Length: 455
Ligand SMILES: *[C@@H]1O[C@H](CO)[C@@H](O)[C@H](O)[C@H]1NC(C)=O
Ligand SMILES: *[C@@H]1O[C@H](CO)[C@@H](O)[C@H](O)[C@H]1NC(C)=O
Ligand SMILES: *[C@@H]1O[C@H](CO)[C@@H](O)[C@H](O)[C@H]1NC(C)=O
Ligand SMILES: *[C@@H]1O[C@H](CO)[C@@H](O)[C@H](O)[C@H]1NC(C)=O
Ligand SMILES: *[C@@H]1O[C@H](CO)[C@@H](O)[C@H](O)[C@H]1NC(C)=O
Ligand SMILES: *[C@@H]1O[C@H](CO)[C@@H](O)[C@H](O)[C@H]1NC(C)=O
Image 1 (spheres, rainbow, N blue to C red):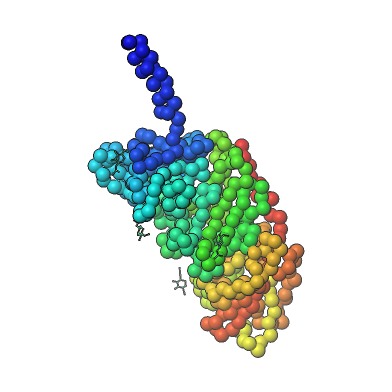
Image 2 (cartoon, rainbow, N blue to C red):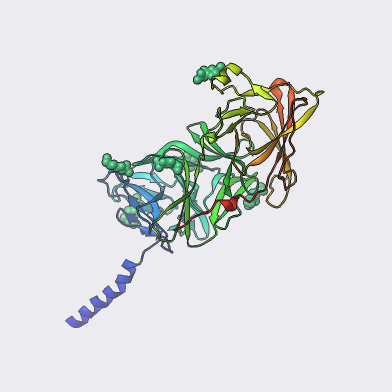
């Protein structure tokens, strides 16, 4: 009899061991996780659990890479409401499908919630996916996902930007400091008030622009291009969505785009389990990326390695030569000869340009601006040309219409292999003149030059 009982205990132990040791990736209304327990995504890439920043005693619910050390947190739930080190935190899911972060599993004190509650929900399940996305599903229906609430990291497949269905504008925001994941000063978002462009801001003020999408990449950032063998970039802009995301083309790779504490973007890339992380891209690239460095009414151009860094477009003069000469470029430049409707005009070309800010001008488009399949179209600016930079290589040719003056030599666009991609028309309405510019896209295989080294 005793042997029988022992055998029974033994076999039941044997059977229960696997269910304890297998990692789980879901929580249900009857199974929660407590501080100390974790969820691991099915392929082992990501882990969800409670963590504490290195020099802090506060605890947070977050998602980090499972096999990469030091611990790299990519998402934080309770950014602004930390748990104290004394609390025994727990993550529950309610019958209505809302995730609840409790500071004490027994006392029902809610520190954070996923803010979802649907009336008709049958069997809500929260699952940590292999992409690093924490989702709440009811059957096949997606109820909530952490990818809709980014922290400071953009992961493959995660969208930045606006979506009419959820009404959410997804923005990255930096941590406050190395020990505090609360939203800091810097944000990375798509400014879609006019013609969409990527911009990093400090509070409400633009810090630098990565520019607009042209089908291949962002015009202000020659590095962020599709067409290499590692990444695929995707940009959508229509009535229901304005978004940007990237995908990795090889399974063994990991990559993330971080908005770091000092407001820079850093793209990390590494191979499975390898502990060497490589920063393959960072922005801003140089001082000329600083937003509007060359003045508010700028028909001026920032170029590295020149003194002064700001120069003015041919046919334009500093608005205030005295200020300009004493290196105060804040007033920028104005056309030398006002361009009236009856005045003759010509086009001037500026090669390797970062296209002007689209938020400060009135922009109009016609035809297809996506030049990835050889299309061509027009982009019209009506207003000031702000934040133009000259790249060392890459960039686009910018053609600005100015008054016909004998002393201006127009240069022929060199090396333009594609047809006119974009025509930009600039009307300086304040001055009652219209300046028409053409922008050529110069397709150079510069992307290949940007070699990625992986150890
Ligand atoms: C959270 O889950 C645990 C275990 O499943 C349960 O005992 C507790 O009552 C739940 N708390 C709430 C607030 O739902
Ligand atoms: C933690 O504190 C130590 C000592 O003050 C400091 O050297 C270290 O850089 C800090 N780490 C972080 C991540 O802030
Ligand atoms: C929760 O969602 C509602 C409706 O979508 C919204 O009005 C409210 O501000 C949200 N609350 C929080 C804390 O996010
Ligand atoms: C916007 O683009 C997305 C992705 O291509 C597509 O699913 C959606 O139907 C489009 N919406 C409209 C209104 O065109
Ligand atoms: C942020 O990224 C920039 C560019 O890579 C780097 O110079 C800077 O040190 C980083 N800041 C922090 C706090 O890591
Ligand atoms: C630059 O010039 C503008 C306009 O004249 C003036 O308002 C501003 O104070 C000047 N800035 C500096 C740093 O001198």
